[in-house]
Amino acid sequence: MDYAAGNMLGMPLLLFDLDNTLVPRDAAFRAWAEEFLREFGLPSAELDWLVTLDGGGYVPRGTVLGAARRRYGLDRPLDALLAHYRRGINSLIRCPRSHLQAVSSARAAGWTVGIVSNGETRPQLEKIRRTGLAPLVDAWVVSEEAGCAKPDPLIFEIAARRCGVAGSGDWAADTWMIGDHGPADIAGAELAGIRSVWLHHGRPWSEPGYRPTLSAPGLPEAVGLVLSARTPLRAGARPYRGPAGRASTAAAAAAAATATG
Image (cartoon, rainbow, N blue to C red):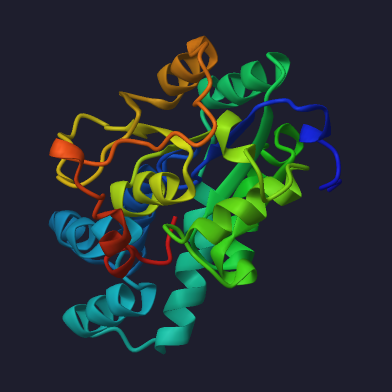
């Protein structure tokens, strides 16, 4: 990948979260869990238990599979179950055509495009490559290989540099972040000084100290909002800081954010 290409000519930068933003990770987990139950001869009624335990991917995989191993009395080692999971989940992940088209539309409109994902490097890169996203983006950064995770502003700066944007000055003024997870994606965007679109997926916003610039029900709608936003953030302007001008509590979200997705 040519990290030097991209934003050298001043094109705006659009960053995407990966899991449950570009790719429907939770749907893939549900499909994997159904196959897991069939393979081990377990009742299909256990599906809801596994989905609840998964926590949308924010519960460590060792915790999820260790609990399942004990509950079902499985005699396979935990490492074998982890390998089984990683092979299965990534084989089931697809990037919807509408999402691929939305990313392509941003590129066609002159935006530089990057992916910022929390998680382990190998499985996240496999998702990017298997789903057809790799040739559509200028760069990506995964928390494990970067040594930092959302909401740390550094990971956004790394993404900007890899996309050809200097990680200093006013690069943030023409940058947007689209993601589904408030404590990682939206808090991280605020801390980095960039605008954001939250994919609400039918959920209410629940963080009192910070909020996204915009919200949308899905990825194509979010990209449409970004492309239609005409006024760049003023140099030195700050995102929403909470009621009555209070300083944001976004930094506190760092303790709650996990290294996934």
